[in-house]
Amino acid sequence: MTAHGREAASADGGRSAEEERAAEEERAVDQALALVGHQPRARHRPPEGPGETPPKPTPSSPVSPPSPVSPPSPVSPPSPVSPPSPVSPPSPSPSSSAAAAAADSASAGPESRPEPGLTPSSPARSAPTPGAATPSSPAPVVPPLAAPASTADSASSRPHGASSADRPASSPHAHRTGATAWHAARALAERLGRAAPLAAHRLPLDRALGHVLAEAVVALTDLPSFDTSAMDGWAVAGPGPWTVKEGEGLLAGRGPTEPLPDGQALRIATGARLPADATAVIRSEHAHCDEARRLLYAGREVVQGQDIRPRGQECRSGDELLPAGTVVTPPVLGLAAAAGYDALVAVPRPRVDVLVLGDELLTAGLPHDGLIRDALGPMLAPWLRALGAEVSEPRRLGDEAGALRQALVSSDADLLLTTGGTAAGPVDHVHPVLAEIGADLLVDGVAVRPGHPMLLARLAEGGPCLVGLPGNPLAAVSGLLTLAEPLLRGIAGRPAQDRYRAPVRQEVHGHPHDTRLIPVVHREDSVVPLHYNGPAMLRGIAAADGLAVVPPGGVRSGTEVEILDLPWASASPWTEGCFT
Image (tube, rainbow, N blue to C red; front, side):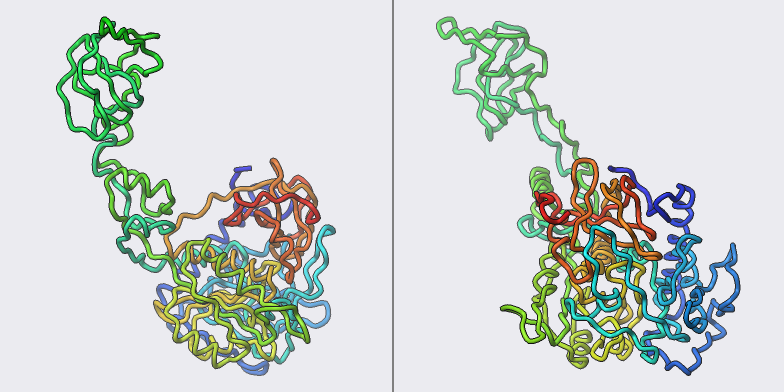
């Protein structure tokens, strides 16, 4: 269950195909980040209308738009070309950058070609290139064990289960580039977080819990700093029997004492400093003292150095005890205190603002008259805290574009999370507001189900980032784990968890072209997929301790898939019950 590897192209894909695909995704992300960091960024601007011509790149641009129908080149990344629709072929849309083409090449192989409306896009920070209307995406294929979702995933951007109409062809948002491959989107989010220089501050030990070390913890002294007794008993010197030395004995916390002559014994307590020349400690239960003759006898063989903690046994002064990037846990605090630290240099927790969108949301009581309960406000804040962030009280903005704009431009958080409003409905304001304030749109849709309408943007040069989550609850969880979690990990300097795979106990059908995230529960040496995994459902994820990353096309029973652990996985003793 600890085997590492990237997602297979299909249930029976070869190892070489996995490695080739992974390498392509890595190259796509590297090119995207290189373009962002080393050339002027195109700002997020409102896309042109259906009849307008996309702007041509300036002469200084390092990328020329290739022909949209040119075949992929084995050397340079090809331009993303959406396959023709069986009904009406979409208009060709030129690539906005070489990184967009590379990401498309990495995410679509012979077995996984993008369907209309699902062309993988670049994770680059340039604005999407307008050009062709994107038809609405088909509903994902649902496995037999799952209750079928009632709406296509494109509707999951309406808040908390409210459906929205299919994207009209004349919509101003119909000209976005295609969806970024799931692994590429996660890699871009983490690298974006790590691109910012880490801040650091000194925190007293009682305030450092949960932070990430900005500096290594180096031993300030030997541990222990002197020879100590590991047991209550007798300190002895040389072979026995030993003459018991008069006195009250040695207690912890006392200073140095006189050397212990050969052939003598002295009572000693655990943690007490050993007298010079002592050769061993005999536990009280292993010794017999003849009070009349004042002689001490050992009940078993005495080995030199037994039950003594010698100076420097744990570390020597100058040894690195913990590297930078370590999360401060209770044992870390204990080790730091033992090593003489009063404070630790740590990275501040990333600050997150949660903006809940939607006029139809209730904060209390039963749903009624078309109104529904806000499920994401109560869920996201504690989830983000479990990821090491400081989270402000969620703000409910309704469907007010002006309120959203004001919240974005006035926030001093490191990350803003919005819920809903990422599609192109009449009250989906996230894209227009981002365009209005000149944000860089880095990811506009991810090839994952549920949750593909998620987005990632940077609001200003060196400024905060925004992750737009779909409004359906499980789709929002998908966006949280795909974009927000790796971004926060990068900002905080946290190390990534070791990736591992586990076999699924049942067959799981997948989307034809997109990755699928399925709630699972660990059972012995495998994972069991859970019911109630539609975009608007939380019942499955509430019983889960992880999410299975199901590649396009699905997997057979017994196939190993990548697993995303949930932050509280070890504290959830769930049983299958009615969820599997």
